Length: 416
Image: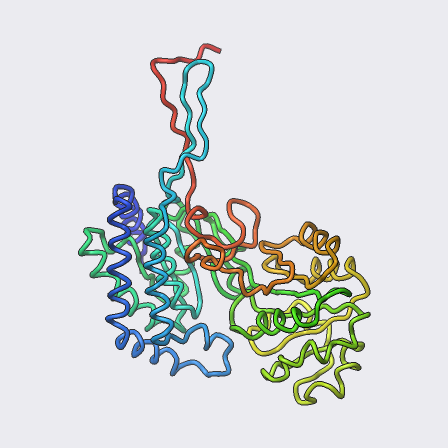
């Protein structure tokens, strides 16, 4: 299928968005939220068609699943997005030069944003809302696992867009085939930036094959280090929350690092995980301590492959370390620069960890479950960027803008 006409229509739609008033965008988002709640039965029926094709044992099953509660949450996110100030037109800096030229650096849309994602239908509306609020058109390349769900969400959105005078091409769902993926990766001149959301395999494929700029939203290989001075009660709650709140999200805990002098507390520290049915892959010192204190069916020796794995399920690795520097070395080797945490009562160790760990979000005595645009007060996010150019961490409204220089003069010319 030839997609250049589709890409051109989206490029033209991005120009229409540039003239769309912020107040009109907010009204549209409120109407879309209402439509989402009104169409809940339809959306759940279409989501059930996708769920029927995916085994419940698949780690993506939870990400794929919609419910009335989740749809209400998506509607609330749209309303919250409407309440946020638009970054467009914001003056980042301004100055007047000695020759009288007035310069201002102003936030503007990126233009056309391409999003490639897997079994996450919520990404469809997150992307649409964020792009509308920032004046960007979007090309959506969802996975086949969520085909019915994504199409249903766009079917709910399309009449709302049209009632507000926007072309349907401001949000286009591309075909499911690989040819559409290849065309999107090569859409030079049509796509300003491409954002992949999904497995490390998907992200790596996009990074290695794209001819348009890419912002990586990396896989989350997440650690929590329980320091020698860690508080047991805090540690229990933080580790349990980070591991079990939602196992399929990228900020879920994958590996607990524990100081060797606290191994005696390990069974108590992980007792809430045992109750939740979490399977552990423990190194030799940790396994020895847990052998008679953790359910045998849920305990196995760790192999090298377990460290550096994003489990996306009720599974977790446990590694014993002898010091903070050793914990930092392990994170540097096996982490994905997403979210990392320390549980400690040592002020110096907390500051060393916060300042040394190279990740988008670094926590002291808190759960990594908070790495989320809404939790950071940013509204919804289009992904968690793990790179350092342009954006890092939750990519919300400001991160979906660029800037341009506006230069106002009164006849000045350059003579040198």
